[in-house]
Image 1 (spheres, helix red, strand yellow):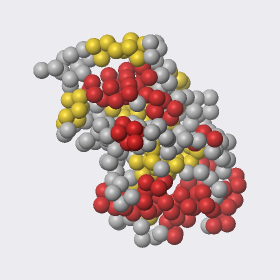
Image 2: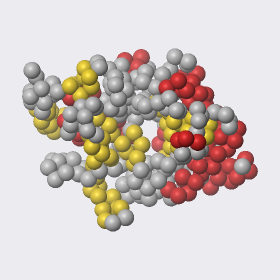
Image 3: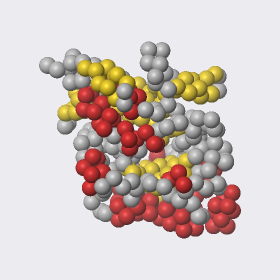
Length: 309
């Protein structure tokens, strides 16, 4: 029995103690806490650019993914001093949340049973001004993923071809896809969410049998739901290359748009154990390269959108 094995690893000059590394977190196939920590250590260079300066919400599973899920925002007092924190205002006070800005933090969080990393759409210093907009294309089940792929391509044509924005896509590690639009952080969340809702309404009007903006699940039928509610203050979205607490340990994976044309693409195609092979095949290229240089304000796209509506 190896569940009680403990060790200390040095990550970029910082010592991180790992405990219970043999504990099984994913049952089929068996993936241990130590393997999870190793994944985040190995992938730190890929993940950190998408987490720096963003408050983090931790989804922790102390007894593995079949056990209780703890959604944790506030930093516990026992976290070491080298873990960066930032103050986040809420309605009745403030929270102190993790900012993941070093490889050791990723490994430390994995040792705290943090399987999933969920990040703000805004950055410290301007938390009320999002620098990303997200469309969550959520199908009723895995059988409709083909429609999600096609609708994501339609959404891209609308965003880029008609509204003059730039869009990026990733698997969520769940059933659907996330389409991200980098923003110049000039507009507040209400403005961004309203814009996203109106874009979704235009696309739903073009594809009424396949896409809906209906929030009530019973009103969606078999249609894909375009969820824009993550575009609100202090809401989060799963980080690129975050593991998901689902069977097989799928990973939220940035994609090139051409990959959506592949009918073999599935929601769980890339996992903790296979995403490294994918990156090796890509020889270091990043489908999301250049995102930081493609940011736009919404004033001009909103004018174009109004004409479409």
